[in-house]
Image (cartoon, rainbow, N blue to C red; front, top):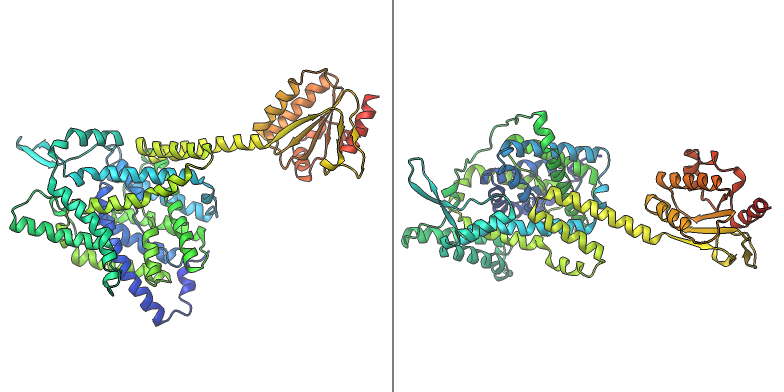
Length: 574
């Protein structure tokens, strides 16, 4: 495994650099408002979002397994981060430790070449938790869109009006919104709606204007709303519109590296959350890489990409950053503007560093309602409502997994949602496999045209009296083994002297299937009934042999085809 950057640098020329540089400018413009918004929505300060975009963006591009991936903070992590930071037991230190643990897990996934395993997470689970995250992100922004406030006691006991601080849970937030709806601020609402319309309409208006058509709607929205709020404050005396400067003190500098205090007890508590961060980051980054592959006709190295994501998530917390992954929207922006090597991602990180050091004081004037508007657009794009609508036509089991995952994500948290969703998906998968595996009972004759393990014959084969043939069609695993046992016990006929179990269509057998088969043979032997196996495939035969299965079954009772099995049955019946 080698970082893609090193291969791309072979034959790298000035023309390619200029394309990457131009793309990096556009991507950094897109990334700036998003990084600030994600940082604030996650419960941390604005600069931590930008620091994450700088450090993680650089490392993911430098070490990654894709040409064009852009890394940084994403909306998917908001729910998890906010839950950790708002929990007094964990706080910011807990977030940093969980992020570093997630980085270790990601490196392990990549080092053991498990990058492709992530692709086996059921699609309904991915759609479910993504839609759930979108609903939760929207919910977190309602307070800033409506400009809701609350009364708190100041240091001297006086009443101080501040922005509404809500609980971390979904129900608690809506209760708080309803309780404080009387504090509705019309100006905040107007700014938020105006910013949403600007984000949607300005790119369309500038579609045919060179240079300006490259600027994302979110930047137009922030600039125009910031100017509008400044003019309202200066000339209309309207001072009740919250800005970033009203709530946060922005440090326009890259902080010094600092190792969080890690204890074994904290690691034990945070490991499930770290696992969720790792899985979510792996899914999002690999989906982004796959989308990018389709756009530039390339093939990424999923394992190298996971290692890069892991390194980034270990390094970013050292500077106080939050979890990061591959960002689909920023990656697509990079591709659409000419970026074709990891150099574009590295340059985008360096440009964000320059912005942090030189221009961050200007961010104090950005209205909180504008950032809420950006996140409303992000949540709408994440919701994938068209995909949700299409999924309703899927099998009921898939729809069940989707909505269970969605509801658990919204009402509880992502860790529980993924765990329960996977359990339900596995249970439904087993149920489906059980439905595809059939066991039929044949008593009179066999048609040679219906079997592949029959010797060539044009005549039907008669089944001797007091002999029953069981045909198993499908895998013989723990879910079907009991079904076979129940069928044997509920035939409602005189016990046969010989039972032939025809296994020509059994692709595999697991330990439970072997155990049940052994129990069946022992039980039949005690009752004076012989068991014959017919048409055992080499793979199944190998599994039975390893389990010492043939110690309880005579070698003559294992037949290559049904013809031999019927002849053996006739011998035993004599």
